[in-house]
Length: 420
Image (cartoon, rainbow, N blue to C red; front, side):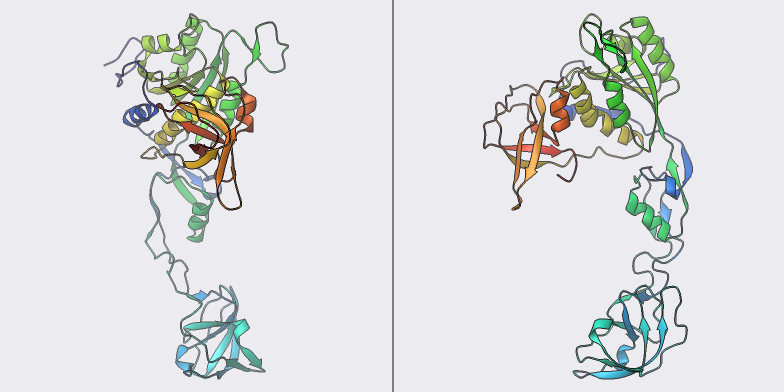
């Protein structure tokens, strides 16, 4: 079924306040991964999503080689509980193997990564032997089958290297390169447009007039969308004019997968986003029981998903992190929304909170040498206070039913980064 703007029917939900868990569930149910793929060179594949599983055409390692600098020999020459000597007959270098087979009573000098010759099945570390000219003396503690990397011990030929839908990291690229793979098929990039709305917004570089503020949200979104899986279009700042906003959104929806707006999502007389979504698209949900960021709308215009974020800058970051980012990962092919890592920490600040919404207060997380985590408030928690957001390295997560926190209480935190 199509509406007057050519938008297909969408799973519309009630506009009442919903929990963040319900919002993420709605997103999970509503979003369909984008179609289309392209081949990219391995050096350009960091952060891209594999569209097909990748298999190895070779064994890794391709040859049996040494894990140490030392001496390769046959374990059949080991004398139980006594030292023994073998004749040194050559050297196997990494990239230049010793190609003759070893005979009984012989050994060769070998370096890490060098091919182990036929007839040898063990390597002893160079620190454990004594050299007497061309005779190498092995200690009585010599063990068989040590320090050997067998052919295919990491990956067998035709074994899967990486499954489809994997987001490629630096280790993945190294693995693929070790199998001689120079290009991969990846999901095409998401096309995302973003904009700010508001008569009060002024471009950086201009002089502020009474009642005006600089538009920081587009710079924040530009950074948050800095991802190798995404192509971005900055639609600029739109004044609070309903016709202009509507025309811009409908036009952008025809060439983009996602539109993200900031501002105009509330219930003021100049807040048109929710009303426009009702007119030319569908609203899946509007208003979430979180703080900061309650007035957030998720919907669809034509085939384009739409996220209307609040105008306050801290709310933009929080709602992007908690709502938009998981949705974008689903769109690029990840199958389920992943949960952020959470820790428990002792709170060194008193925190003010009322029941009714799940709060993400900005905090500073530290760890003692003994491993204990402590957190304190990063400052004033207003959704316009970017200085506290800049100082913070974590969210202090306070549940809907939670009230004020006293110094010394244990709280849940979500680090922005895995290192602190």
